[in-house]
Length: 164
Image 1 (cartoon, rainbow, N blue to C red):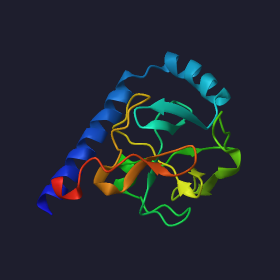
Image 2: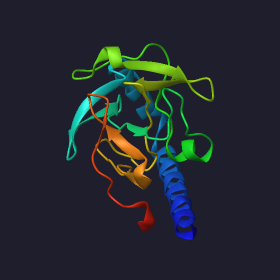
Image 3: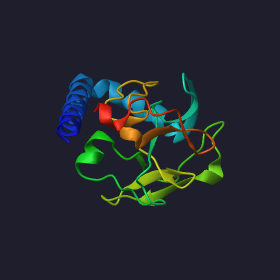
Image 4: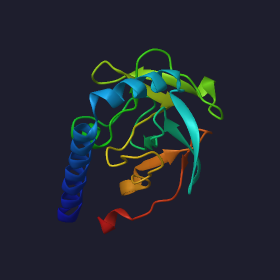
């Protein structure tokens, strides 16, 4: 249990540092073009990675599912949501090429935001994934997995929980 706690603390610290770096390096002039691009981009699209074709958000960041969720109800809140932020949006979600629009919905999140849901799985990003294409959360503690265009978890557990 001590090693698991230490790893959890380390993940939160790394995630907090990553968020701080992102916030400090963004300028107000670069935010405007990004917003215009995001508005035209689909909410969810498919990207090719070393694990195959996976779902990513409008910014190209990997989307994950959490096996402890029950239906469209998220089991990740408070500290968990700081490391694994829910993939949220306003308005109706849009599906990019390769994404089944019928499987893409939203659910009301804890903060009354709209969390993306695909094939019945609430979707999340990982704060430690700071660039498109990163999949640092794949298989984490045997509960976090990238999600395929079919709406299933893909990849394999990269570390057994006893290694944490």
